Image (cartoon, rainbow, N blue to C red):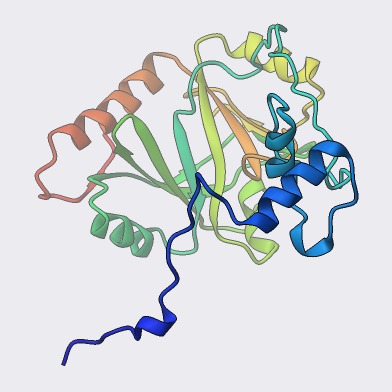
Length: 255
């Protein structure tokens, strides 16, 4: 049986052109400056409109604990020039994980692949917080569009930025990476910015890389990798494998 609203509960629409006498009295009192009875006082927008004010804006709370109802001045657009420290777009999101193969399986379910794996790689010629080190890591690379995804599993107890992360009880998203055509210039820019290098190396002579502490606002650290003939070929092969991937051969060895 259809539900019917009793006629006694229906409220007729307000007559905008002929407001009730109490509202007309309120408007008149607001204009003349007389005291308006509490029951007929209007809100600020209505009273402002009645006075003919132009450009009324509702009050808003200011930033960082500003006084409620205070007027917030509109800032002029900044005309300053910002010089970026890191070159170009973010090229990579990297994750430090306890089990590389289990993590690759999870990413494959999302449709990210194929994974190109560099197993048990010794990061010779590395330095972590002023100490010489050579951690052994297995790394998986895959692309999602133009963004490279990197999964890193450290296999030994050598001091490193990865072990520092896992020793803190963490796993997962670890850093973003930029790839630099002029590694020396980029590292000079990080020094000028006051951002210290906490881990760096050459990958056994393949390419220079550095992890920079940029304050932790994007990720634990930020990586800068040198683009040279070796790294260009490697990153291109990972990207091209993803473009043509049909789901077959989901995990492959690098080389």
